[in-house]
Picture 1 (tube, rainbow, N blue to C red):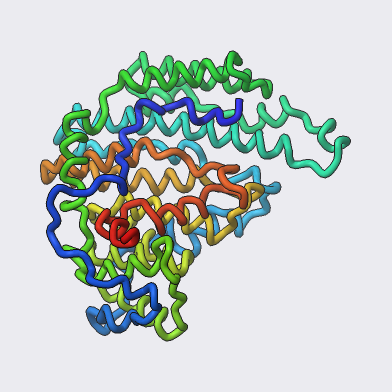
Picture 2 (picture 1 turned 135 degrees about the vertical axis):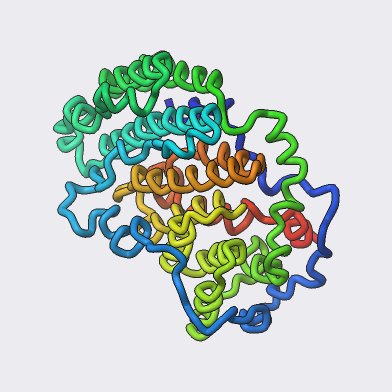
Length: 407
């Protein structure tokens, strides 16, 4: 089987196509010229620093430089790319009692839906690690010496019954979890169409479709219909179209001078409005994935809701991985990425409950079904560079800009 992970959550995914539908009503006029084709517009021509202060808006820990170093094992002696510092148990969501009390059914649905997806994510990560390790040889002799079963047993997932009961209060759901974990424990490297692991994942996916979720079909259909007027970044940063067209496919991509980049960095750091800061940090990440990851991580750890939080997490994860390595033979800390995802889940859920915001629930449902960062997803290696390219060219980009580039 070529791509084991593709069978699961295929029908469960509620992901919207974020670049293919033109809105029925535009709320601003398109840019008059795509001046970046000529490479003439300066950052300082577009934006001004909000204040003299450069600040971070959270007590950044997980996504700080130290947090990054720990997650990628810079402070440890890992064995190749097989280890990561974040434990699988840290990827699960356990809502606070006070949040559960406000809307018990919704909170329970989100906990079950995400934790169920998290188990799947852990299995797929381990499977892809095995596929990479089992082909990472310089000679036939090394290949013959690779102990498939020993590797699989070492990296198979193990959770205590007590932990599973806490993560999955529903007994029927726990049974499905244990079936998948047992199937992976018995996995012998055979991933053909009729192999036990393949059937187990298919069954796991089918069961997910029976679970309650953050947002149902009618809510998501309405969300998709009105998405672009609501998501339009120009309502917060009027100059954003000029920034975005710097990196669209077909433009003469701008590289910033050191002075321009420093100025842009200060613009991001001086904006305390969460929506504006998110929009600007997302654009900064296109020029520098390291600084971009720091700013985006700071936004996530601030636990302030913004409608751009899903995009922030997607960009943060890809930027963090790209900063470390785009290789398939490197540490890909999907546990770490999902631990940070849980912060976003909690932020979105709290906002949705407190403000009765169904749009936030739709974003949350999208966040839950985002797959792990895949190890062998591109010619160059892992999926981080592919995601960054999609963010540059298509994802979350208003259709008016894509249309303008075609004219």
